[in-house]
Amino acid sequence: HDYWSTPFAESLLQHLDLRSGLRILDVASGHGIPAFYLAEQVGPTGEVLAIDVSAGQVARARAIQGSQLPWLQFACADMRSLPPDLPTIDRITGNLSVMFLRPNRFEAMRGVIDHLAPGGQVVLTFPSLGTFDSIWRRIDQEMGRHGLVIERERLAAHVAERPSAAEARGWLERLELERIAVVEQPLEVVSGSGQRFLRHPLLRGGFLDDAYECFEDQRLAEEVMTRVSLDLESMTPLIAQRCAISGWKRSVS
Figure 1 (cartoon, rainbow, N blue to C red):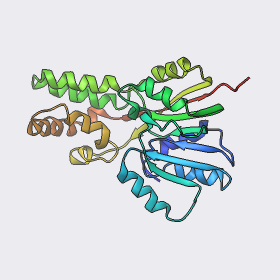
Figure 2: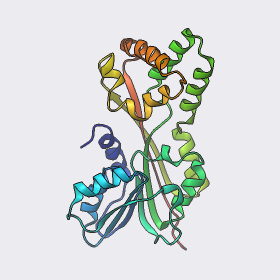
Figure 3: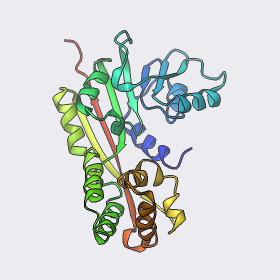
């Protein structure tokens, strides 16, 4: 269980057609949510290849796995440049994955779909545009109070880079997938103020870190972010948008 990955994985599984014997590619697999569950469901007649660009995450997943589920393999690989000799796959999954397809997300998505077998399904989840908007607005407000023009521009670029549900649907339509489904579900994150906010495990990595990266002067960043963290009431509730996208590749006629 993971307080961030598990709710998104639950959204993924709601859309995934899963049965024994399937060959599954799980991209951006992290430390194994939902790869371990997928392997349990496909059983020894199936196969799960779980890839992540982080060698540390792969090592952690392998340590958790030990000698169990030998038909599950964790490997260090970049989903944006999959090997051309990779066999075609029945299902492609990716929990909290779409944001890692940058910078050329559509081209990267097309490269992933190229490895999907005819009649196969892809299901991906990600925090979509609108996630933690109340936080971004408050940070922008505080930057404006300090007259920080460049930092505000950088923050706006970070926020705009987050894919929307409509954008993701457009990718699947351009790839001519069938039975497309795109669903957003809100997820509320509860936090205390001050350091509990700034060091919150679900907020810091990949979200608040983006705001810190907007500053050249990290002392100024700490000043701005500390003021933001003490104004939790204006940002509550903290809402992430869980987006799940699903589509099927056309069968060969």
